[in-house]
Image 1 (cartoon, rainbow, N blue to C red):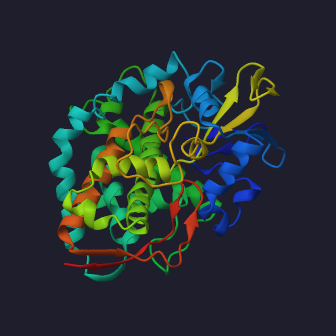
Image 2 (cartoon, one colour):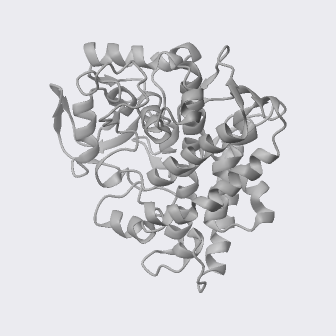
Length: 394
């Protein structure tokens, strides 16, 4: 959800301002090298252009994420209702726990057959040959699951996808499309919020198991909080999962692992954990200090913004052996790509499941899956690719 920066501007936590050092495609693709330089030379630094602190070492980043009393996700007043993403205890539990059972591994295991059907239905529509695997599969797959999980009417799916793309300003799905402008983004967010608001009203007395009904029938939430929850599920569970699937194919092709993943010689679930560490969709998380603190010998005042670079922490040699090597069966793998502490990602089990099913079905249905890594065009937040050409053959 959106949060307010020190100047009062509402910001989306998935689209925080990037440092100058990451302003080019080449720099985005060389993130690990920059992270290594920063861990060595400036493990804690203040960036005047972005008006915030950057923290790069695993020990410091992990400590920040686990100390919600000192490093809060509450950024002040916003135009939206309270959210589990931007509240600490006691409000955090009220805004999160009512939906935790839906995201539990046991509940998701029961949903796996339906998620597999969705994957197969999308794959059935893919013509073998050269395709953009993002627009053809990695994008519509998690979006369809989110739409169905929210309980949206099937006739509204296409409109939902358009709103979703525009509100998150994701890269265009076809060469003819353009990324939404900030004005179009605001319009999409407003229209989608109104849409969710109407559905919440309609389902206030419902008995369904979809996420909108679960929120709508919760008496502990205000109407605005229910709408904010629905929008938050979209934001947190859409683009990051698209990029997790894409980044997995990117890694598996780069390190020549696709055949071993397909055959089971390499454990697919464990390989996904290494993708999360090595090339995580979420590269940073933002907190605000509630009191003066010292990190890495730097004095930080109360009320300062701090960017905890999880992408750097996941490559810290103080925690990971040979962190610049992609080791698909790395154990233990203490990555913090889903955050830590009370704010650890509620949807982490769903993201893992979606990625596991997506890769399983793709590699099962196509004998040849060959991503083309010759001309990569990255996107910054969440970290992934704008497109991934791929040759498919059954």
